[in-house]
Image (tube, rainbow, N blue to C red):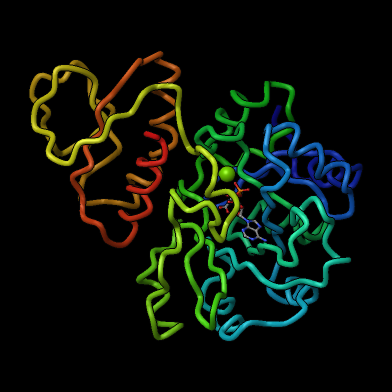
Length: 309
Ligand code: TXA
Ligand code: MG
């Protein structure tokens, strides 16, 4: 159900959960002032309670008030990338952030989204936790219709149209004196070099039983359709997920992610394409993985690999 900005603000202030658009994906929002609403988010998503949430704020100053200390380059990163698709995991004054939101950790994840509706709401109601607005494990929602498909037509949604980036924020974590990437996302690793003087290492390891980011432990971004990945796909006697500028000999049907030279377009279409496979009840597909392992392609490749798990 579509709601206005003022209805969104009233619902949040009444301790309800609503969906809110951001520049990455839609989020399920609850106020930090209502721990019961935060509990409700975990229930709605079917999310394990040991997987903490991202606190979204209107600006870096709001974030700084929660911090126990500021790691090196915090201000430089905030200045360069906020508002925007960067999440920073930071040490917090624990009593100021509900236990559920940080899953009991002494840190919390923060970001300032670059979306006019999300920012307006944050200005009105204060900081909000916002995990992606999808059932736990499924592809995230990048359109109003995706949220409706997961949570029903009566669920209150602030409709912001399609999300520009289409993949979640990049998460950085300060470990052993360096920022590391705890989750690949909309900002590629290369983009941090200018600010940090080094390219942060990717600490994402699917086999790691102790990842920096608890969410990385779980099956993720996956449709019901079985995905198989191919790095040298030319012809295939079945359904293909691939690129609009390539020809797949023998394919029964091709789901196009976008042009093979435009990773931004591919990222934007990624989850809608994965969701479409389920809507069309496609049993299995082969995915064309022939793209470079650099910049935003690294994030796209990681999401597809996890969706295929
Ligand atoms: O783009 C995004 O980040 C979207 C939009 C809505 O802002 N949100 C999003 O939230 O992707 P979610 O809940 O789907 O993913 C949050 C990730 C999880 O993998 C979680 O484990 C990690 O952030 N996280 C949250 N707090 C953490 C903490 N204190 N330490 C380490 N990882 C944390
Ligand atoms: Mg998520």
